Image (cartoon, rainbow over all chains, first blue to last red; front, side, top):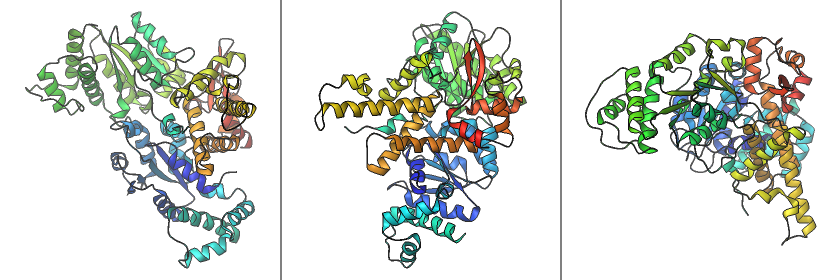
Length: 185
Length: 387
């Protein structure tokens, strides 16, 4: 059984210096997911948020968070420039993370015109919210087993500042929010 | 023993002469080299993403090195292939040939040529003082570089292996690029990957002309008795990249155990072997996907247990991730069309859809009784059936 945070971490960690995609349910959650990925960045990655493919590729020694204005252009340019990511240095350590909106123009461009890019990201394009929607009750139970609290109780403590702001706790907070939102729906 | 699973690096093609290279069944690299050595060129190369085209080009370059100045030109590492112009193509070729001639073949090139290439900003990597000056058009510069290298090299001939041109969008621009190759000296032997529509579509004759040889790099057939060599190949790719000995997945090779009984140790090795074979089958014979599955599963193992080797649950989840990727690539109408095209030669499938699905590797071309037959990728089957 996949957990949303594990899927996200796996996508970010599998290929050193590769490309990962994070699928966002909507633009509102995109910003949250960007900050989530930012918080998961390893020490020294110095995440760089940019809307430019060229700038993201040029950021060799940083973890680039590519949040495009025009998803189609970004996907096609990244498809055409894919191997530039490994061109200059095989020492690139951090992934280039592309944020796309689920069912948006970027998804269509990937399917229609970007086979090279889609091949690279195979298995590394995470949709954490979709994963979390698989079995909410089971996930809530697993969350409780893991933390000793329900997602709602854990989040209350998080929001009150009672839980330290560390990378793993940010990930847990995101997961808890997905479970909390789903229950209300 | 700590294994470096990051070394699988599914996204990084091997370079010519890489130690990690494993010779594959019906090697395209060997076929390419044989055509060139038989003076039969140009050679065009096509196949789905992740099938190993770049690695096989590197293999061909290595095989040719004794007899040719074999220059692998990974265009996509320097240019955005969506926007590359004919002039940029020619300049990149010129720059790469000069670079390899100096670095790999230790040839002394004229300072004027180097100056002109440096002026065109295509000579990165050569850190020497460039003296003199010379100006020329991109086509002339490419001809000059190729002619001078061929003259100075003991091999006397240059083979260009062009990678990345499959990413060029269909349209007049792609034809201009292939026409630009006609500006190169006639004696230069050309091997090039061709765009998806040329590799998989009936319009291939616009690029594949009479007399040219087409080498199809297909997904490996890993099923049944006939797939035995392919299965061993993929297993060996994994072992090679992990720097493990050949018997690492052979339970009968275990003759002593330290932290557990001999029986338990053998059972453990057998379980690992079975897991790797599962990944082989589920990859559909696409080497990159096989490496991605194993790398993904290993990442889950590390995240969950700090473990070295993945277990079945890790591989299952890696497969679920890959299946999600393939499912997202399906567009409206694809599932029904795929179901109809499966186990046929695909002639009834619309051209645009066929090219797209084959490039993605969702539909794999198999040879059955010497005839092509389309097969649905194992990890795409569920998505196709559910849709």
